[in-house]
Amino acid sequence: MPPETQTAAPQTFSNRITSIDALRGFVMFMMIFVNDLAGAPEYLVPDWMVHFSDRHKSGSGMTFVDLVFPAFLFIVGMSIPFALGKNMPTWKKILHIVTRTLALLLLGIMMVNGESGGKPLWVYSMFIFSIYAFSNISPPTKVPKFWKHFNFAIRGIGFAGIFWCALTFVRKKSHILTLYPLHINTSWYGILGLIGWAYFAAAILFVIFKTNRTALLASVALMTCFYAAAKKGFFDNFWPARFVDFGGTLGSQEAITVAGLLLATILISPEMSVLKSKIKFTLLFIAGFSFAALLVNGLYGISKNNATPSWCFWADAITAALWLGFYFFCDVKPVKFISKPLALAGQNVLLAYLISEMQESVFNLLHLGDWYDSLAEPNLACAILRSAGCGAVILLITVGLNRIGFRLKI
Image 1 (cartoon, rainbow, N blue to C red):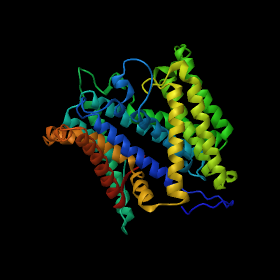
Image 2: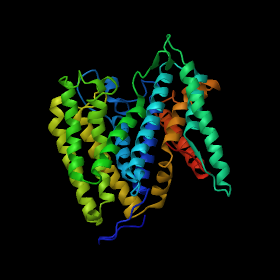
Image 3: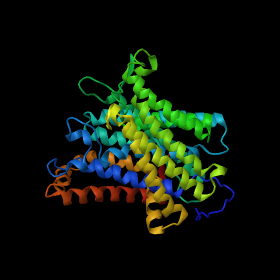
Image 4: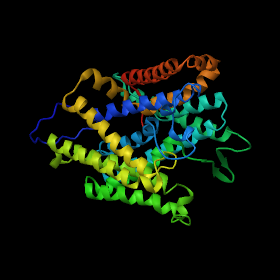
């Protein structure tokens, strides 16, 4: 994207915004880093490098670790206007939204069950089949028809494998899927499942309201009210609440995604084509959500696990501030050695996440689990280096796969 000027220019629409890709890549690196660091010896890692709730029995608060998941939700919202396409018919948008949501819920449910007691071979197979099911292989060759058929075959194998994994998983006489009577064991939806619900509601709101910032801001306020309503039992007898948490998942967490969508509208609205307008709006956005976080802090405190409004508002403000910094270094005054690697890393993050979650089962199958654990045992510096190296290697692998035409698409 060329540097912006201070004068208005015709607004262009692109499916890729470098700053959003770069921020996504940065957040994915941090997600891999903190997840890997959680496996280091507890006595080595200070309190500020773990989730606040892990070591604090009372009170409220958060660490940078508690900002990783909401930052990703925020970026999901920022990506929606570009993912759905400017000229896509409404029925295609709805089909795309539903298909993507179901895919994320499927992956989330499979992963949650695997984490609860799946054997290494089962977990490894589940991840491999999941990658197959959503693979999109398109190397730069002159035989696209072959790769089209090849993709169809690989995806078929992947979905058949997922079905087999769902039927064969057994833990304490519990299955993921039983056909008679039909039952799906969800437990909870996992990180990808929560992202799926957030994407679904925010994308539907975008289809309805498009770039109407007043309506989107009102939606953020309404979804935040869901949290308070749920605390008072408002949704207790509401049938859909049996399947999804209206206070957290479709309430305050969903509000984060819609807030990201709200901020992204400044990148596609003609009246915001001047750089000064974008900066002014973003700074007001940051200030407004920061003040809101302070105002509601006394009601429910700050808690990631409880998805309190104050935690959500702080996540909105901090992620927006991060994006503004990336916007300058990636889109306004590009610094190539910063923007390019991160943007490349941010273009295939689902694959990176699946590889990172599959890593433990691979090491266990190869009898390398104890060796990998030992890398973090000498001291905190070793633990940080191991986790940072893990994040860097996984992102490099996904960048390399992306360059040869292997990516995931849902």
